[in-house]
Length: 186
Image 1 (cartoon, rainbow, N blue to C red):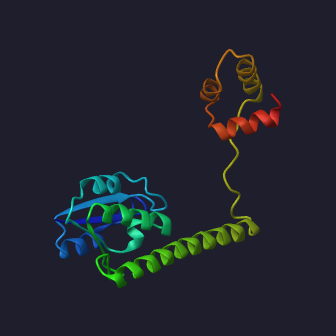
Image 2: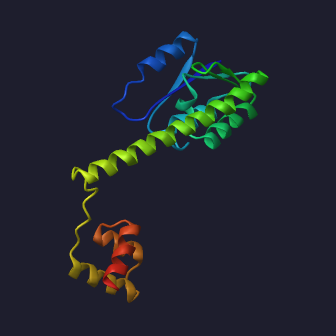
Image 3: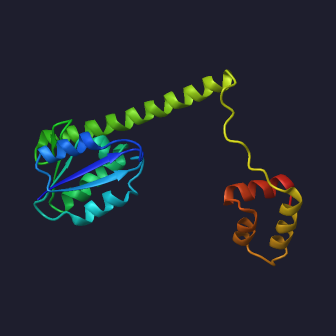
């Protein structure tokens, strides 16, 4: 069975081009994720990996749709190949059944990781420039009632509530909670 996998980074992006290519290749079932490829915790990706069986063929538009870093990409392809499933990337003309396909697989996955690094570098540079121009101030600090925080902190330190309960009462995540504990010395 030919199985397609498509991914776009956000819900607003359109996967129509990928779907058309996969259908042209004869994909009988297509799994679609609308989330970043920076890690492999994606519902449809995991469902597809569970679904595939020996002699199936997994087809993607490009390797960047499957993963954004070399380690994840190669691990996913290994999972696919361990199930005796063939992998094809259309854009890069990679077919895991050939020696040259296996070599190109490694080269292109490294290039996808390099491109992601470039994207992050450009993003950092853009933010730094915007900060210099006074157009970017970052996220506003979370405002909290210091008196209430100290009272909740005292309950936590006194063993009357857990740290989790204290965080919940204040509506804070762990990192923010513990930073405030240090800041206020409680």
